[in-house]
Length: 67
Image (cartoon, rainbow, N blue to C red; front, side):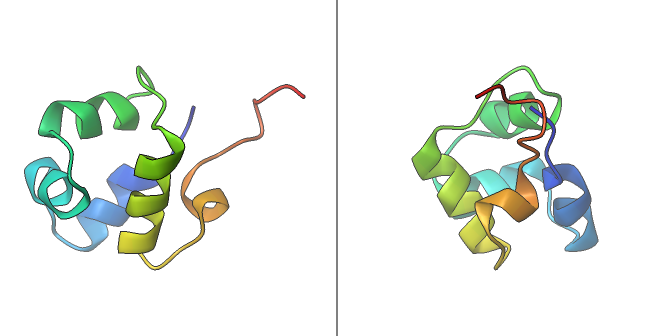
């Protein structure tokens, strides 16, 4: 799943470790989400979106999700 996390994080001059600490996960998880190897849980997606003061849909691209 594509996300805007890397762009948002870099715009705030945050490292992956910084973001991970803010949302209660590991740097490895943030890395995996950013490169599309891992899909965040709903709770983690909410925490990330909330941290950036955005909705989940603004951060995560659901266009490739089938119904």
